[in-house]
Image 1: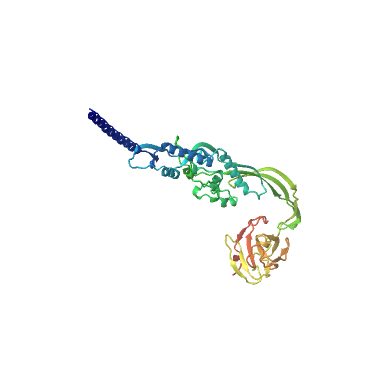
Image 2 (image 1 turned 90 degrees about the vertical axis):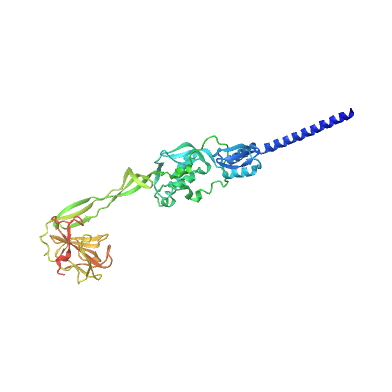
Length: 460
């Protein structure tokens, strides 16, 4: 009896131990099966690694997002979704540190921003609406910085194109500051020459002085995505966009008022003669003008007011009424200098004369008998004489001095001047012209009478 009871107890212990072993194996197997299931973390199509706790990833992302948002002062969102999928990966160890490091390295982010448009064309994104006002102010200041040395009173500085804002999502690195936009638009060298040159360049070539203030912290931002971001904003820089600046300036100018000429007729003077008895004086007037420029080029000029400062004084001039004998001269010319000289520049359409090179101070001779119509000075002609011979005229330019006066009669071969190099002349020489009278027998302008080749009058 006792032996049977002992045997029954032994059997029950064996069954218990067997059951415990089976249960232990089941628990171990379940633990192994459970531990082989991990959360696989992916960003887009790229697998970042595995973790055993999804909440740790979510907390890391939230913390990183907050720190980046605080750093940049913006509400940032992840540009690509982070996906966690629970999978059976036997023998695959979780690596949360590696996953976090790869998230830091690969994540890029965007924010709700504004796109600046120029006449409806998208240009560059900015963080806030106030940046547009700053861009406009900077553009105006850029121009005014180069006009400080000018006396003009600037009335208006405006942009011809319409700049507007449109809500937009953009990557953090694609956002521009007002300073960077101005750097994109202005070519400094051209601007320094007061020619407002406005252009668009690649952001990668932007002056580094305008980029140095960007944060050195390379984390963008991170958050589980809810809305798809817009297109990459850098592509908008390929658009052919320019901005024109319109300036209205008020300038004050002093303008000369030409004097009138009062003529007094003199019957004792030849018609080829005239004499100024009272020189005229130009007057002056102050003119206030509004000058409108676009990109540095004047497009309009509006006279606002005029005020006379000094009244002009009329010139009094005597003119002759007596007709000269016809012909005055013989029509046979003598060589117009004493000596041979060298003709180094002959007659042509662009040079209606001959240039006779000869020593300084050589006598200049009247080619024929006539009347001195003009004895004076011209800017390029230097000291020059005009003689009237009835049916033709002769001219003598670049003289060092004159020996006859206006209105004086001269004989053929008379010394009337000395060779010089006054006016625009390369060395001493006589510039000699012959012009055929147009029938008026009066000299009104330099090119009134037709020029002919003087060499045809000489046997040379």
